[in-house]
Image (cartoon, rainbow, N blue to C red):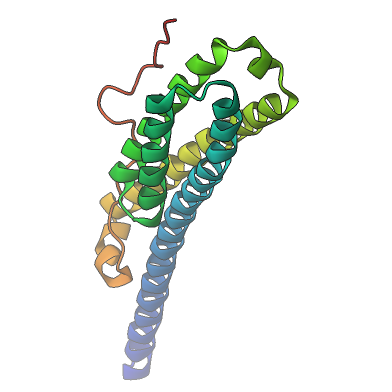
Length: 189
């Protein structure tokens, strides 16, 4: 083999190695961006739900003004939800989400005691919008967890794990229900 042949083989190996590194870097960055996008989708739905809540509360207040503790709970949960949506902590988002779900259970329990309220077109429309938002939120959570699964698999498997530091990518945490909120809440009248 001549010196030019050996140099050509080394150059070819170097080009292949650089292309592999670029591919690994891009693959990890795309997976990280997908997980970021999924978390953003959760934030959008949490914010949408938080924006719908005051309208529902005002509608219920008109019928059940004496249920002050329920409305205070919803207000506190909404504030926590807005704060968590602005933060990047997945566990805080899940905890705020669970607090809001619990507060909404109490609002719905109050609504059950007022047949005129349940028959109100405004209340029914808000309930429908909230149900749609809950479905979209469930989808956003699943999308995020799927994206995190893909990212975490890449970050923890060879050969991509060797490029995670170079790409500035690390494993992310899954969106999980906080302790005690895995089961649907029970409402008793």
